[in-house]
Length: 220
Image 1: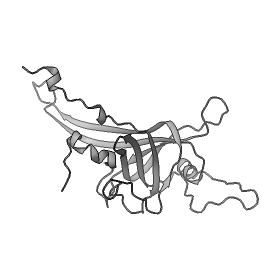
Image 2: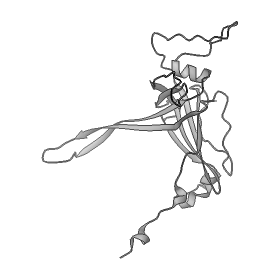
Image 3: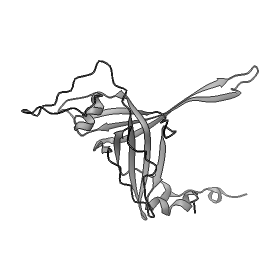
Image 4: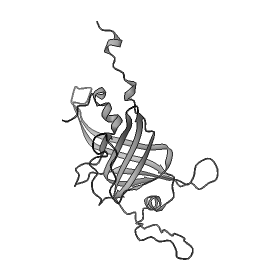
């Protein structure tokens, strides 16, 4: 009989960590993202016009949640369901932005900032809450980077049609270490043009070097 050490297959070089990263936001009308790397060696793509970085975020980083619901069929005499079907599969992204700028102001207030201007004399910016929140949709792309001996490894999460469905509390205080921040939760919805609500991406030179070790075939 084989020993456990003969059966085990553990590789610490396959453990990933997000050492840095950014969340990019764009209007829903911009072109679709189909890849985050280009050419041999996997450098990152240049994002088309319209994408903007949220900037610095809290040390919590970016949290992706996945909520599923199912419907069960039970049968007489059976102690377990005889069938279960997934009826809901939703992915969310929670992030806390630390920079105060037009992008975060617009996202956190829910207003259209395209016509906003600061006052001519004082530079003051005034934003009035709308009677009803505008269900504005965005494209969202989060890119995270890890390091390896063969170069960077990029991990991406892309929502082609996302909307802010939850806002965090706004705290203005000098107590503690937290600045004014903008916590928001995006929910992904299926894009009719792209046929999905969420795409995972992995790439970069470090990723390319590990394909065989990860058991991933590469197209010829």
